[in-house]
Length: 414
Ligand SMILES: Cc1cc2nc3c(=O)[nH]c(=O)nc-3n(C[C@H](O)[C@H](O)[C@H](O)COP(=O)(O)OP(=O)(O)OC[C@H]3O[C@@H](n4cnc5c(N)ncnc54)[C@H](O)[C@@H]3O)c2cc1C
Image 1: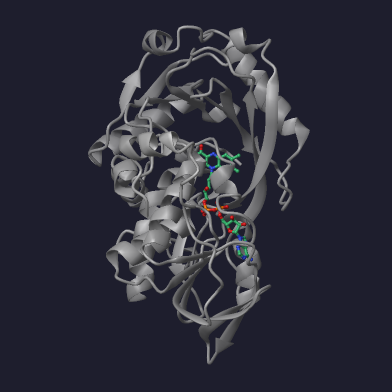
Image 2: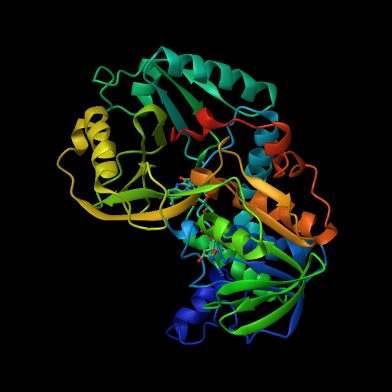
């Protein structure tokens, strides 16, 4: 692998950038692998990387039906934070946060992780109670969070309209929260995994599983059968489809979730502002575009477009809260298919089929977990025993009622 550095940049500039190597190979699938990962999003690629790097298993393939990072990884609003309510979630998201903090160095790839600070606005008494309870729980887990009064919010976001239809009564701030470049996360993990011997196979759709004596032995794909000792499914919004192929059901529903970006403007917003009760999340990208996250559609669907009413419901409060943005033109809008559980927490779990594990249900908030999720899933796959941080997120919690309700911290109240 060519190491990326200022020197390689200069050397390649002198050669008119003709000599860069492709960041990863495009191999033909082998007959069999020790582990097949289905889904080439951030979580799947991170899993493959940590399998090869930390578990000594590099006979691994990542099968992606489209292009790498073209699913929710490349469609999200890139918010990273670890301020969740329950210990189980705090452990996972903080594990991820710690990995984020050194990820660019680890992968030799700039994932543009920017800890610019993240505000959760409170607009009513209920919101104030929620951030109060959650902020204290976060403190008890040793994670940073601060309460701000309206004047302190206005100091961070000087143009916010504190007394609009959605009055700002306070906020919860996580200074270590922020954003990262989503494509770079997929590309960085892909390049590093490929370098360790992982085969990344794009345009390879899994269409079925071969299961013998209740044990998975491989996957059927549009490029033929590929044998596997173990299979890890990390397909986000399509997890129910894959589960059905394997003969069981998951407690997950799929919805379109939308986002939009404005035309680029000069730097105006240097933190992330989230507002769960009005479904509006806003940050400014390095290109200058305002990145706006909306709520999810109210109906199940596999359409990656979403309904226009959702955009209207998002843009309305954005204009109320930030009147200076009212004349901005929106450049692009898109949707992704998110996999939502009833308690808004993920499923990282064994399944009724031996050696077939699923990592899904991250819903509207899995980008922030990418490194942590990949790390613990890799260790779970390697040992076929769940990593202690993954243990509480088993499918079985829906049988015994041990739900991890992150409805409020997930901040999307669908
Ligand atoms: C609009 C939007 C905004 C969001 N904002 C945020 C945010 O700000 N912060 C945050 O933390 N999270 C956010 N999320 C959620 C986050 O994007 C996801 O939870 C996360 O990216 C999931 O990553 P993944 O790798 O599991 O899934 P994906 O990136 O979706 O990867 C799954 C891959 O599986 C592939 N696949 C599916 N079926 C098959 C098959 N049969 N065979 C082979 N491959 C298959 C798909 O093509 C896809 O590439 C947002 C999501 C959306 C849609």
